[in-house]
Image (tube, rainbow, N blue to C red):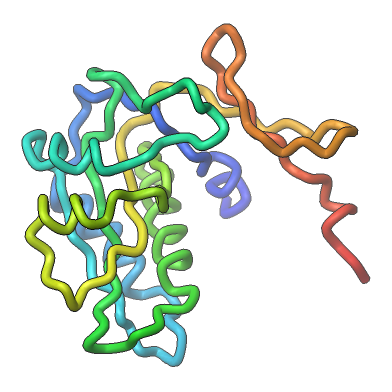
Length: 189
């Protein structure tokens, strides 16, 4: 079951914008992050939630969507995320969040996949503008943004080609292809 969830947990960037996600659902997914491991059990993460179209419209322009798809500016109206979770580091608790944001993001996304949704972890963020748009105090570092919704695109895993190119791409039908290295190339001993 876990392997199936992980295989389904792709970086989705296009969504069915007419299918909402409730704040209750976002709380459930953040609870998964809350229960996950935290370095030295400091638990420095906080979460800013948005499932409101007006607030979402202020978050969207602060994000950069797909580095390898340089000619694509992100999802068009009608296929944009219906919710966001902004993962924050509370500097009053710890100046270093370590690996906690990645663990939290993965836990949240696995919960989303299990519920029939999906998302994308975004680290390319206009942090100053987002801080202003969400009125976030300075003691919060903006670490990651999770864009969430019901995926409207197909994402498939491909073997890395012989030239070693790991860049993802979209084919003429809009299918998103993601090369993954072979397992035997990852294990050293």
